[in-house]
Length: 169
Image (cartoon, rainbow, N blue to C red; front, top):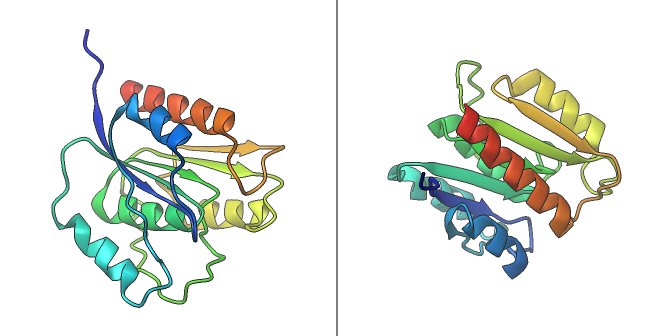
């Protein structure tokens, strides 16, 4: 049986980008689009949001930190499965925000990985927000020794678990 391939949109964190090592991991699951954004540029978030006017079939969103915030909002708005690493659900250095359509009826798979030792985004505060607003979340994992940066081995492990869970849904 042939492996299903996805259209993967990756949103990097603030002042960051997708590393080649992590891109290679994602490419085993499909075509990866990972544009580099300057989130601090006026209107940047709206232009990112506008790019979703046409959604390809089998689209998956993956985001880290501020990109995790963008992926979470977009996932909820368009009912697209997402994988988030330390999403900046509360702490954001960027003043512009997207309208957050918290809809408890959304059934898309959400898989969130939080680092207990994250020095930028407080894990417990993120958990509280997830519990309160993200009713569609299917899985929340806490990596006890992970900080804000996602080590490649942890990234690979959770990408593989996410796609495995996607296949069984």
